[in-house]
Length: 246
Image (cartoon, rainbow, N blue to C red; front, side, top):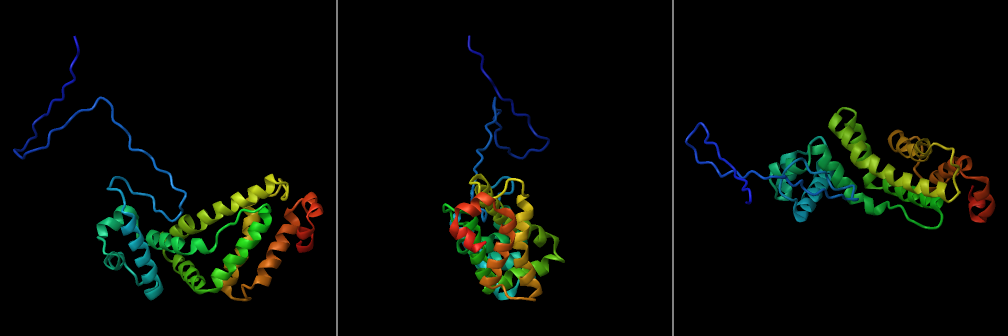
């Protein structure tokens, strides 16, 4: 004889009409979707699936307002109005204005500073450093400097800059550096985080202090100085092109 599972509905204390409640034997967890796109904001709890069109409108609106008014003057309400979306929708997808702005900025500039994948990982780092310096010499550099300055007094912006801009870019650079280690071009005993700090921190220093230009010559010399201590003797010996550069 088959057992039947039944669900009882207990009446509430009021006379309001309630929707029937169905008790399930097992609850099915929502599927987890992973994305490699660093510009995609992580969803906040429950909510309807994000419309890609609305998302793009929000990111474009945030970039436009950042360029026109600056971070401090722009508002969530202004982004929503420019994007043709509700403020509730924005808060469902992002925790605050800073998160929207950093996702928008990353989406706009990431295609301009990719990490190439060739047979020389250390040269891939060099090429990306040259692209990054060129970006910072242009209008995005003023934006980065402004966001860093505002972040001194705005904790949310400081965290968004670190978590949504700096760390995704750093993760990509670490992959390239690890590829150089596996290829035998970079020593295994070096600390990769310190190496990346030595390669990229001077960019932000010159961007903010402006004591010298962010020129290609500066980039080449920074790369050479760090690589002289990082590459293996075998790599320098077998690669004439590398030997000439370093």
